[in-house]
Amino acid sequence: MSEDLEHWVKVVDNKAVDEYSRHFHFIGYDPYRDWLVATLGDANPIRVVYSPDLGRTWRRLYVGPWQFVPFIALGDRLVFGMDSGVARGGVGVYYPNSDRWSFRFLRFVHGRASVVQFSSLIKVNDLWVAALGSPQVFVASRDLNNWFLLYAEGYSTDYNHHMGVIPAGDSVIGFTGESIVLFNVDELGNYFNPPPAVITYLGITDRVKGLGFRVKRLFRR
Image 1 (tube, helix red, strand yellow):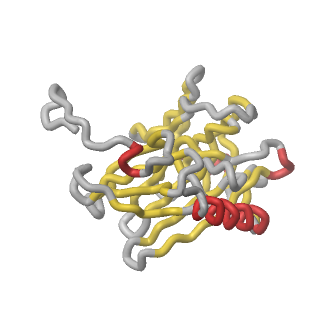
Image 2 (cartoon, one colour):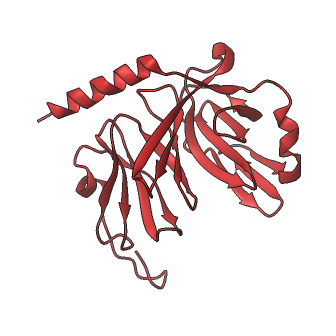
């Protein structure tokens, strides 16, 4: 943490939050609740934590099998993109007013890719735009359920940590580590005409695997 961008003080490391975690995945600010929110991995039980005092203390927000990287804070909810090794892919939504989570599981149509692992997520007007680390594609959605392909860099199962999207005025900038792709916000709706590339699925098998993850962690010690 820094107050002047010259002098920095270590606030916390991932082991202090969860001794079984390997690293932080993402950290961001929730302006609606004045929280810092962080996601962690890998294969550890504590997946999401938040700090109500800008990093001095941390509290658990989600403990379970589903692993996340990016999140977006809205007035009534926080939306997290999965990069879970248990589920093929999905989105987690936390509702602070009721202290409740909901999950929807995502998969590629036609099995072109085996996973849907988020790397970056933004909301532009009424559209969600995401960069996936695996496969290396940009997708957009109106409802978090059906996602339409914007651009494909590749379909490797190796997670690309450089995949990202940022808003820039009337544009969205996508970057892959090798390419920069520019999307006009007003033209994003044109990509919604073909059938979606990513859709929801019931995830029954994944839920069973998630239960096994929980049981295994109970007996870890």
